[in-house]
Image 1 (cartoon, rainbow, N blue to C red):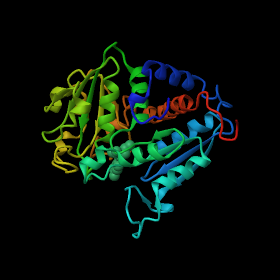
Image 2 (cartoon, rainbow, N blue to C red; image 1 turned 45 degrees about the vertical axis):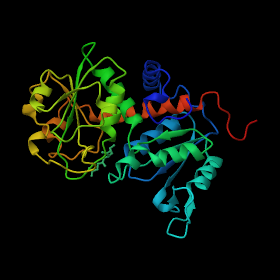
Image 3 (tube, rainbow, N blue to C red; image 1 turned 90 degrees about the vertical axis):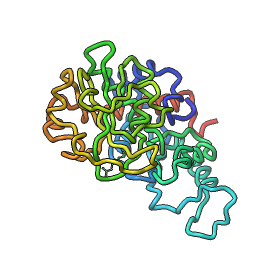
Image 4 (cartoon, rainbow, N blue to C red; image 1 turned 30 degrees about the vertical axis):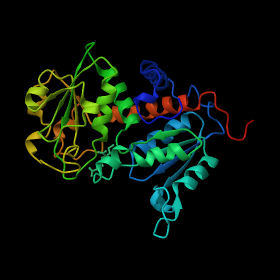
Length: 320
Ligand code: SN0
């Protein structure tokens, strides 16, 4: 695997899932695999699970870790051919090339602006790292996708499904802030590769880019969508068509016990962080049918599998 920025970088999803379950059974089975290698982690935005689970995954493979919150470093310029006489001190060309001198994999987190759709969906920051770094790039959530989250979500569904082809419902929920479409986009993309019946439900105006939702059933009636669901994945996102806008904060879309009662004893999922009693009621999160903590646990094994594949057959930079 050269980089890991979406499911399209995974040559074989089934094999990736199997490897992740093997690591989950025996997390230290490859504890010397990446000895002497270093994971660089670059954060443009906040992170709790992604930072800790990816760090844990790297440690399980024997790696060292260097992490940088970009706001603690120089402000970076991403545009080419600009006269850098403003507040941006360093160009991504030098920054990515220099970071590559110290690490064997460079992991990057960068959220969308939610202002300029064209720029966000070109995934500029991640693409510039790919262009100018000389080591593999691992996405820790970009402006469009969150593949490590989706791989962990897939592991969680595979572990908990009771039928061969479960009904999975991705539901929009209210939220006080405008959030990226990233987690929803990525989840749809990964569900396309496995045997599930995916329904996406949201108020009108919250349609995702059809690039990601094209194979899902779209249902505007949330109650109808929940009928017989085996998994309910809750997530807020801002509008794609009216880019970055909050069109609704209708609390009728919150996930409640009454709505979960429509499902087939459905399991509840969310990538976290979650706003309690805005997105979903306490009674659901505090119920054994909630998988949110196991989803977070699976982040380690998703990241461990991906790091393993990025580093397979690679020497450290000090070896000939
Ligand atoms: C991010 C998102 O993409 O929706 C990260 C999820 C993994 N979530 C948030 O920014 C939530 C922020 C909040 O204030 O609730």
